[in-house]
Length: 177
Image (cartoon, rainbow, N blue to C red; front, side):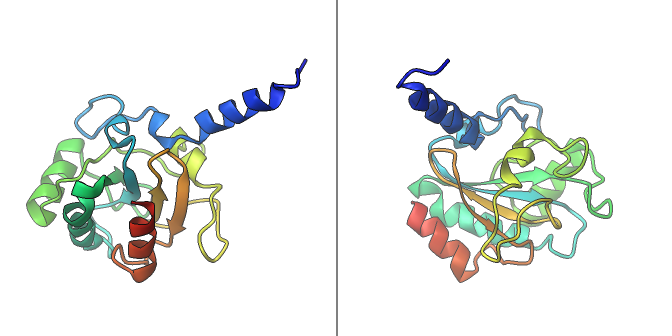
C-alpha cells in the first residue's frame, strides 16, 4: 500500500541502490569496504590485469591519480582473471607487480568476476550503464572504465581501449570535479 509519499520511498531506495560506494568489496589486502574510502570522491573504477596488452594503462592511471587526487579524485583498480587468464596472481603478486612495475599508489580491490554466474554485485550495478556508443552489458575486456560521481552514481563508461588520458575521459573527470 502506497501513500502519497510512496514515491519518496521509491526514490530513496533507488538512490541507495545507485551508490556504488555502498557495495561491499574487500581491498586487495583483505580490508573490508574498499570503496568506502572513495566515497565522496570522483572515482575511475577499472577492471585490471597484469598480463594484458592493455596493462601499460596502469602508468596513465597512476598519472591521473597523481594529477587529480588533491581535487577529490581516485582511481580504483579491480583485478579480474576472466579474460584469457591475464590476472592469475595471488593478491601479494598483484600488489607487488603493480607497485614495482608501475608505481601504483591507488587502491586495488580483491580479485573478482566482472561477468557471468559469479559476477560481483559491484559489476551487476555497473554493467547496465551504456558507453558513448550505446554499448552496455557484459564487460568486454580488461581495463573497461567507469567514472563514478561523488554521490556514487555512474557518470560514464569507457571502452577498454580508450586511454585513461583520452580527451573524453579527462573532460568527464574534470567536469565531475
